[in-house]
Length: 218
Image (cartoon, rainbow, N blue to C red; front, side):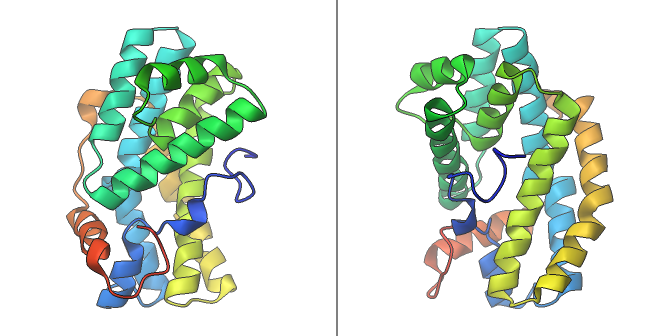
């Protein structure tokens, strides 16, 4: 939870995952619309894909299957559907690697970063490898990652819609069972099961690249 908190220096607060465009477009203008948007992203978009990749990377790192881990890391970075989503995952992953190397340490993560350089490690893979190095439980790691992902996007919506802090907290509360389900499903999935159906969220991230007024980098 320390690594996934707002205090950890990965710059998560600067990304909206395309949500800022959805607000500008008029798709997300209320707490109910935000819940629907984020629920779909978690179930059918990056939430589900990232959770599956995290679980796969965690297991490969735990078993020291270095070649499998490299392939998973490359896949995670290649799967980003837009320029800004690639930045979102890669920049956060790079910042996470730097912060972990300078504080908590994670030898498998540092070795992977060296092998992949100059390409960054996608954020969920960086979290997974660090958790494996520190012998953390996989199920709780996946759920914590998804919770932080959702909370960051709710925070973005609180600023962009805008929504009240209380409404934002209610959305996070209501997303908890969705997060638990997605996390549990990821534990029994493999990279072959990765696939997305949140097309509007992907398009939002592409449209955000040319949005005139922007608070966020994605």
